[in-house]
Length: 152
Image 1 (tube, rainbow, N blue to C red):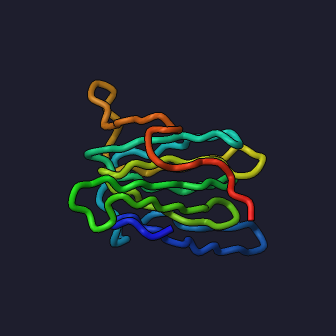
Image 2 (image 1 turned 135 degrees about the vertical axis):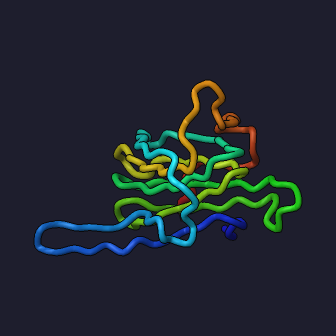
């Protein structure tokens, strides 16, 4: 699927040695870093879809550290050069990536395979329980996207 304006997909470099592995997720001198708000982990069980979410003030920086996910982003921003498009990005422990989803874009994911996925999100704004920066739509039927697996 074509890229959406503002979405960044960065392949992460894994440095293995006799002790294990290391990979950097995000640095403050990365060109796509804006500011630190909060870091959290979330998990998704195999076959579950967590979608659709959108923020107006927050940028998300996703890295799947356990399992694999398919992240889907939808652009319905008025005047965007990629308005109407969807973008799929598969990543996780077998394909380490950082995916930056800027504010204003609908996004969600599904866990791939048979195990629970664990996702690290480094957000640009801390969560505000009194005024959450989150809009939600149902995972199925609200946007024209089919979450079912496509074999081929």
